[in-house]
Length: 328
Image (cartoon, rainbow, N blue to C red):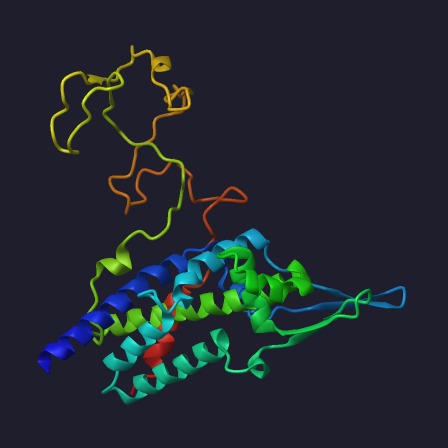
């Protein structure tokens, strides 16, 4: 019996740790950089105005490429086969909180909301339905917002599901995207809130998780860096090194200032190494450290690929505080 419990706890720990790592990557996405705007996308506003006695509606949503990358980050959380699947994390939380009535009730409520939002039982649970008609052929199509959103996620973005595409094609890419934005936004918000809840339980000793899952680097802040290196080269056919820590076989020479870089070519015949004239930059001591970034990096991100601006308020602390306030 004790062995069964140990196996359950090990499985639950693995699921929760996987969820934490993936959720932290979701939290690093640029859409989460402005928390209030992200929350607003769950229920996007539709502008209405009159022009020449005609009603016109206006939608203002983030760039599709931005939402697409967010969908890719949340995708494993929606996959039942992944360790970080949201229902696995919630099941593990329910087990950990089985003797804490208020927490157990909270987990049940969160699980019910996840179920309704990402896997509604019927089309009536979806936010709206779209009906279109082809005046040329007389064909009519009818699809709820949830299935329309999934046709964008699985037909246009993370997969090329032909059945999803066939179902969503009559409505056009814009309607598929419009339906997907609230789903992606809600999943991001719920994921980040659940992450904060898990972290609070961990800090209070309810959950036994490895500290490194809360500290490990999960997303790159910059894709430009320099680091010190030793480089060696050898003629084609020279015996390659057998390991990273072993001595180099005979025939390998160190790269120096006097080396003719034009001799070093790629497989396609292009030049492999190119001299640079950039100012020296101190590289980070490890991938988990942001030390050594060029001066000013992160202070003012360059559009459109700079690091996301963080919200003025500490929303993670706010969520943890909200959870603690619920405790007896």
